[in-house]
Image 1 (cartoon, one colour):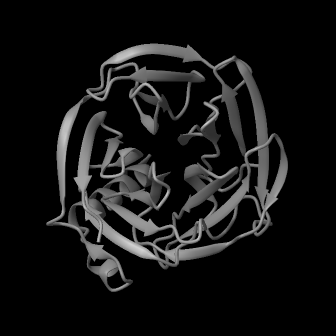
Image 2 (image 1 turned 60 degrees about the vertical axis):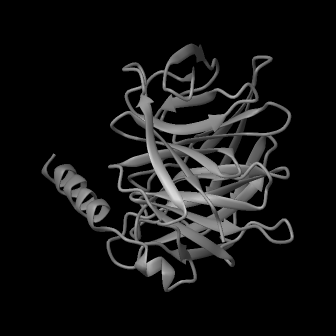
Length: 278
């Protein structure tokens, strides 16, 4: 209990004192003057720890809790609850993020791995026709359970051109990184090879790609980082911009347009950030 409180205080301090200075030295542009954050509302009490957000075709938002009932909640952008749907045939061990594809499939990342010891990592592929498939995976570069170097937690992914791109969350205090993996969006069992990693000072907690597919965003405790997509390839090579959020423990993010993002925090607050990229 004391260790958990210490960790919470440690990250709270990092959130309050964070800036985009280190990211500027890596090639990001500080978007302080080109962005605006406004609070839209509060999530209903039934959503007590929103851990993923996804935009639906009707303009509403899908979200979920990170454990407990295997349920998806449809909400308005104000946070008002519209409906709740139990996803049969799934378990909410540690749901951490959501993404969708053009065929209306919903992908649920049951891959939270705080203790670095899970051997049942999976993504549920749910179709509104009520069919659910399972995509299971392991990290090729993890051989110990729990891993002594704590870089195998994941809370962030998105769909792009038939693939799911995953970005890990580091629990290391020294030399933290985010690792990038990808896998097909089809049911099956996969071994994921590390594609690349990037030193990121704050833990990565969500990800999404812009509607036009030209850039993507990673949410961290305290910041949003943007990367350009060139030649339709997802990687860390082309940093674009950094927005300092400092809205407590931010856990979920989704684009609602090419210039607007919604994000939420563990305290149940829902925000919109508007921005212009360089």
